[in-house]
Amino acid sequence: MKNQKLTETEKILMDLLWEKETAFMKDLLEAFPEPKPAPTTVATLLKRMQNKNLVGYKTFGNSRQYFPKIEKGKYFTGEMKGLIDQFFNNSVTQFASFFTANAKLSQKELKELRDMIDEQIKD
Image (tube, rainbow, N blue to C red; front, side, top):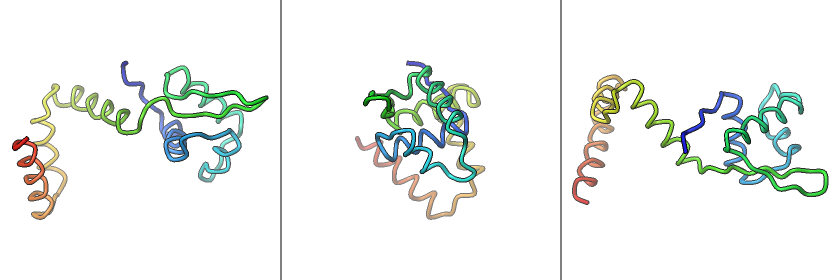
C-alpha cells in the first residue's frame, strides 16, 4: 500500500486515534487542542482519512467509533522512506551523512548512534 500523507490537522487527529486506539467523534473533539475545530471539520477530516484507508469505524446505533487502520510506526516508516527517496536518491547512507553533519549531535549522541550501528552489524 502506498503511504498516504497526512496533512498537519489530519496528523493531530491521527495522533489522537493512535493514543486512544478507538474513539467516538465527541471523544476526538474533547481531546483536540485549542482552538478546537468545528464538528463538521473533524467529520470531513475523518472522511478524508477513511478515503486514504488510514481510518476505519464501527457503527453503534447512530454513532461511529473510529480506529486507526495503520500502526503509527508503520506510517512513519513509510514517511521516512518517502523522504529518503525524494531528497536523498533512495540512499540511506546519504541521509545518514546529511543527518549526522547537520543535526548538531553531541559526542555522546554520535557514540550512541555508532553503538546502534555496531549492534545492527553484529546481527
